[in-house]
Picture 1: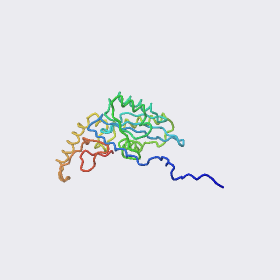
Picture 2: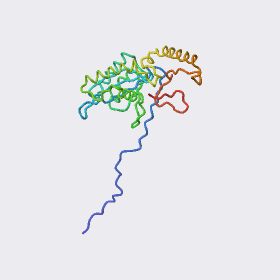
Picture 3: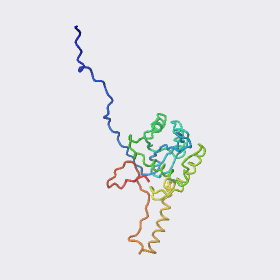
Length: 244
């Protein structure tokens, strides 16, 4: 029996495959020397009694002062709800220079991107699978969930909103934030921390003058760092400040 020759299979073209050699995304490097320069935002889950169901707490933070400048609690993540939150924050506080966020769908939504671009506000995002590119928002959520009165579980949307509303008021007005040398976010945001610093320093120096034997050296009253940032150089850099 005769037949045609078998075609050389080694000559067939190689099917294209998905490339695994992607260029790493550059780390966002952000530097603020005062309020209203850089905002970061994120969304966290608030547990409900039902498995697989969580309310969504949105929060915008000024990274210099640590003040929460915008928030809302909803049943879902939604581009339009995020836009509404930002528009309310802009109306109440003015425009920042840059908005930073992670790389979630709501953070990269076209409608929000268009809003910020139209207002000439810069936008930066976390690198994929890098957990410390948005430390300020993550730290704020940690503070929220470690509050002694944090319920852990919220039975309905109204109770979640009421609790977060009270928390935001406490956080901005009364929380002695370690990241801003135990001043409140409100006082750093509006500059009144300087008056409080004078009172602290006066009391501390008076105590030193009365009891110098209790100190090795004259004490120094700490003030908030003049520079705050994300991914700033870390070696011998006085501008570096960790989120706390």
